[in-house]
Length: 341
Image (cartoon, rainbow, N blue to C red; front, side, top):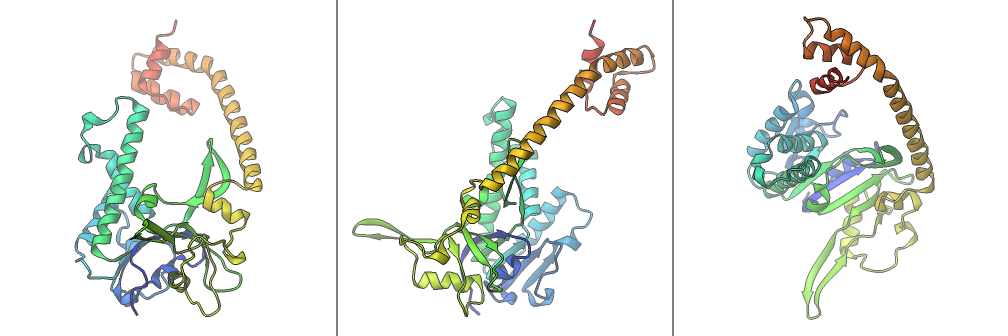
């Protein structure tokens, strides 16, 4: 079996839609270095892989940053072209560990003097560096193996702090930049091979007498035909006959729900869910603010009472107030109460 595709690929999508199987069909298991970090048992025996790393079992008890070190040590031992494919199923925990490391060690990626002095702006700049670090590591994997596969689940999408009813890939911003190919897999009622919604399309470019020409290989929706046993069979059909810029056929046309996945625009039903969640959130916040306002006099009285005891320092008073009123005050907040007339 030859390698079906070269590049950095991201598969996400519906639960049990076949993300792992689709990813593993890109090459023979003996040519794959498989990093397993999912609750489900992989569909291939560990002994059949060229390399199998059980991150679930082998990293029990490790903190997030220690987890990062463990995975990087495994990767550093791989030689270029030792395997045809490196696959992470799932990528989420390792990706998070990379970003958190970058946030905690910003000076390793950029001179501290170049960060903004403003808290919010500085935080945004640090997260930008974190995403760049994640992209760098993914790019380094592509130097070790010609195919890099990243599997992620879905997570809830929020807008204005409220759930929208939409789902989005549990993946960082770096994926759009670094991945060559991204697909959202959906259950197929007519086949065991999933339907694919292409989040980032394959294209081929060439320089002709007219200049640079770019040809879209795939439509936005991939539906397998009879006799096609994997997503890669569908991809190869279109590589032999590129989609180009023609009008899509009926089975290549996403429906309204699928378009919401591709464009990020909510459907009517999703917007109604979001609006209901937003109203509920706003009502809860109003109730919480009213409760906090009603607590102010009680907190002030309790602070003054506790301060009368010479055995109570600022830390002791802070802890007592937080416990009794379910707050998250710091010593400076309590000091402000103590200084009130």
